Every structure is written in structure tokens, then in C-alpha cells.
Image 1 (cartoon, one colour):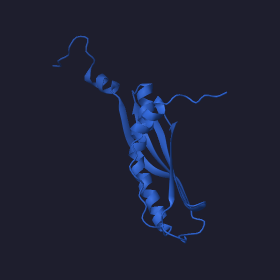
Image 2 (cartoon, rainbow, N blue to C red):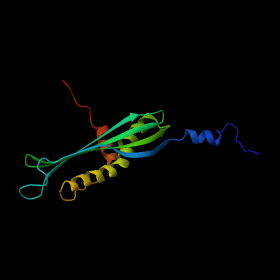
Image 3 (cartoon, helix red, strand yellow):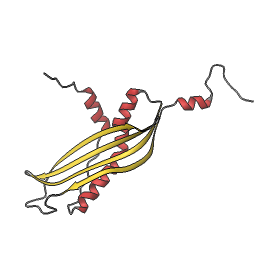
Image 4 (cartoon, helix red, strand yellow):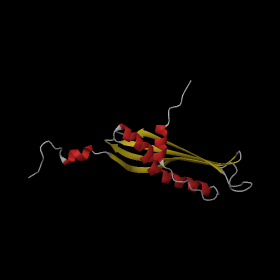
Length: 158
């Protein structure tokens, strides 16, 4: 005997309607490392570090998205480039029943937040293998970056 409330959705249908964002796979899609002069450097080790983050998303199937976090780090001493590292860390995410606004926020905040520790590790290993001192990127608050980006006024063009 099954207890059903009149007008209520069956349990399986209710489960199918719930929002889902699930990680399926994480992988290094691309990486590059350049150090024009190797670990040789004149003066003290106090480089100017520049960090650039970009997130992209591609739909691979009805419920599968590939999200790619590109992290570019450059270190300079004056005008000379000490090293340049770029890592494209990717992940496959199952996305189901997310409204468009929530999907955009998830791709810009949750997904890069999952991928960043992997990219951070890859960058640290590449820099260390290049003969430089240990290099760790600081944590990134993708939620704050997304909020700042969505609240800033659009650029004015003439």
C-alpha cells in the first residue's frame, strides 16, 4: 500500500526537479611555463607578481558543462620577466534544474572555487621545478570577484 497525498508530486519527480551541480572530473587542460633566463637573477628576490584569472564554460551535453579556469602568473624584476606561468584547469560539471542567474553565478564562483586549488598546485610545482623558491598563490574569493564584477557599471563608449 502506498501513501500518496492528493495533488502532491511523486517522490521521484520531486527529486528530479531539484537543482544539481555536481563535479564529475578534474583535469589539467593546458599549461605553459617560460623563464627566459632560468633561475638566474641579479639582486634580491623580490619580484613584482601579476595574477590574472579567467573562467570560461562550454556546454558538452544537455546536463554537462566543461568549466575552464585560466590562471596566468607573471613575475618581473624591473622590466625583465623572471617567469610566466599559465595553467588551464578544467572540470566537468553536471548541471541540472538551475535557473539562468544561478547557473551564471555557479559557473563564475562555485566551479572556479573547486578548480583553483588544483591550478594553484600546478603553478607551484612548475615554478619550483624551474629552480625558483616555493611559490604559493593566495586564496581567491570568487564570490567577491563576481559581486564586484556584476555591480560595477558598464564601461562607457563614445
